[in-house]
Image (cartoon, rainbow, N blue to C red):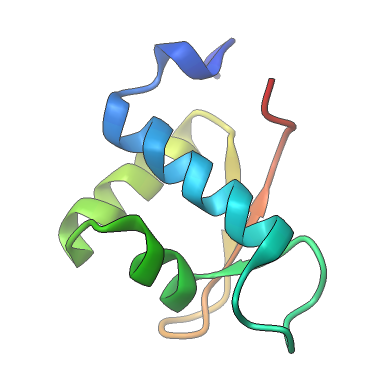
Length: 83
């Protein structure tokens, strides 16, 4: 597991910042607190689907996020606080 956000690739780091923003102030009000949904993250991140999933895989492998659910209802939670 990576010790700091600075060690993440730039694309994954930027996606993590988008996820954190969506967790706090995402556009979907019907979701549970602390969750970002994949559609809102995809809309906000500016990556194509393949690029987004590649960055999500890095973030999961490094222990930054938890991804649950089945497409297209996947939910993302931060696994640890951003520092």
